[in-house]
Image (cartoon, rainbow, N blue to C red):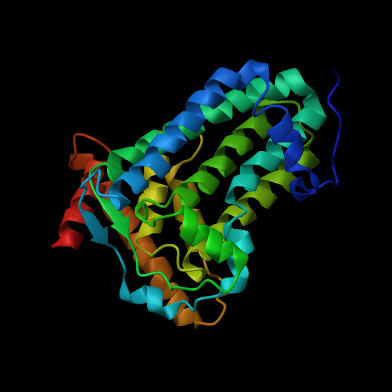
Amino acid sequence: MKPRIYDNKPLKSFNPLVAYAGVLFGPPSFITNFKCFATILKEFFFLQYFEKFHILHIPVVHVDHPLDKKIPFTPAKVKIYLDFINLWVRPLAMLVKKFGFWHASRLTKQWMLRFRKLYQCCGKIYHFRLTTTDRPKYKEMREFRQIHALDPHFLCVPSLHVATVFLAFGFYRHIFGTEDFTETEKALWSEELYRGALEITETVLYVKQHSVNCIPAALYLVTQNFPEWITLDDARKFISELFVKPEGFSEEEAFQVREHIRATFEQYLVDGQKAANWYEPIWEFLVNYEA
């Protein structure tokens, strides 16, 4: 089919149910998607609950940092925090509308292969050390009650939220460059995904689901394992644009947060050059933090 043109239609206007009902559970990508969902269950839910119920006994490191207290707890941002799945699902719905079911399914398979790999990479860290922070016992909103009920909060470093949205930006940017998109679509949707990734990354700190220590590990993981989608310069630019308009704390404090994330990220790169495996610098960081 001839691709449709959506020059003035933001990704947020596409209904994610189109993707859930079609390409995420459709025949062309079903096996790949099933394997991905199985990996998510294993590396996210089972791992945490086995630790919670003392079936596993992986050491748990508290990764709180004094800078975390500079950023005010902002419950109203929780809906943004929870949008990290739909950030990558809505573009799949767009692909269905633009290219049709079968081609969209093939592109979905490409994403789900990388998404599964992302969880497997995170598992390299989680099986070595689980990590947590002192999150507020806030249950005034339904969203927080759901978070506290479903997330035992043992997978802080690296942040899956941050790694997911950062990788999604890089993946779709690549798709926009290799498939039949107009220049307007490329510019509009790349910018929307990038700004969405920045906003969600900031929000993991505003809703106190993560520490400033969780972000550099996520960015480092993505650059080391998906260099075809995300470059070191992408990560450095991303860090430099975090909290440029801080809410409830000062620009000087925002600079301190960015500088900590930048310095930790750069140290991972330095240590990674001497390591046999990409994940060893994060292991070393956690062992030292534990001490």
